[in-house]
Image (cartoon, rainbow, N blue to C red):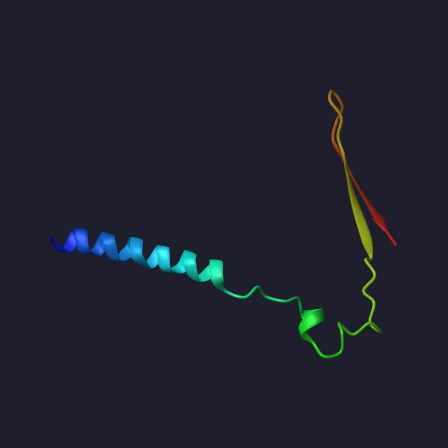
Length: 68
């Protein structure tokens, strides 16, 4: 077995180990669950604007931005 075969087997082994690690690792929890305050329910983030994309076959596409 020469060094090229050894290097390729090492790469495949590392990739397999990373796949198995991600398969058996605990899932990450969202910040609101992991945090002791429950996501700080007193703070509300309100979107300031919205973007609407409108396109139909045969017409020019339109982008409408609605500011609140």
